Picture (tube, rainbow, N blue to C red):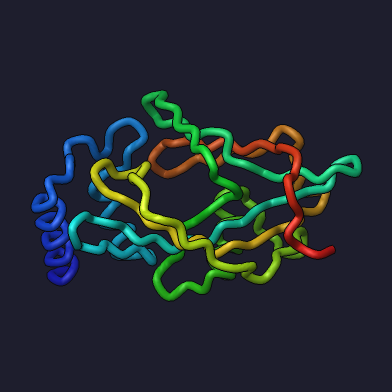
Length: 195
């Protein structure tokens, strides 16, 4: 416990030193300091301290597709709704994603992502590709923690679902913090997985 408290204190000192607006954290769509500590200690989430603070995140991203009436559809995140009613719509975000846990393989992270986000718990009902590559994105302002930049390493997968998993009206995920995430279907732009 002492090591955890020391790490938490060190992270807080770094954030204060860089004048990060911690008073904004935990409001609206922003995550809390406690959430930040959880990510920093449990996940593949690295705080790089330099001229500016950058959070390096490793995530499994799964592009979920389904063939409906001879047309391919892909799942997308329509919106996130916070308990206070604040709505977040992300641009240029394809697929569903979960931050990888420490010591978790990207493929295991993709399987966990499908189970947690969509409740796809039976791998026999979908075809998951091997990792198709890693998108290393340039740092951008964090959507979760004001004052920080985030640099994402997206381990990309594609998943074709069977009819039993397909819900025409999409899916809804409820987070422990009360947020709800809504997913819908749109026409597929490009199929990555050979059939």
